[in-house]
Amino acid sequence: MQAGRHPHDDAAGDVVRWAAFSCLLVPVVLVVYGTSFGGAAVATLGLTAVTAACRVLLRHSEKVERTAARVLAEERFPGAHRGRHSRGGAGTHRGCHGSGVISPHD
Image (cartoon, rainbow, N blue to C red):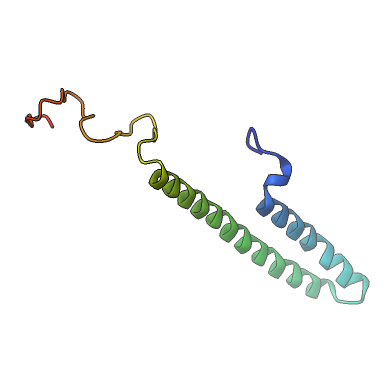
């Protein structure tokens, strides 16, 4: 868990944890109700594959959402500081003293 985040903030993680729990519970229930060990093993492999694919898709979706939020924030606040090495706007290039003349270094 990342610093500053609460356990209830990670909805995707909750879904993945419940899915992993189900991957363990379903084969036990299948065996108890008469399914063969082989059938339960196949069900476990299938559930595990689906859970892994869903986890990848959820994490990708979270990255896309964060990127979209960052782009939206930059559109709303164009003069905001964007990072250590970002350039703020016109006239902020290194060595530019605002004379209006373009030097070979610009």
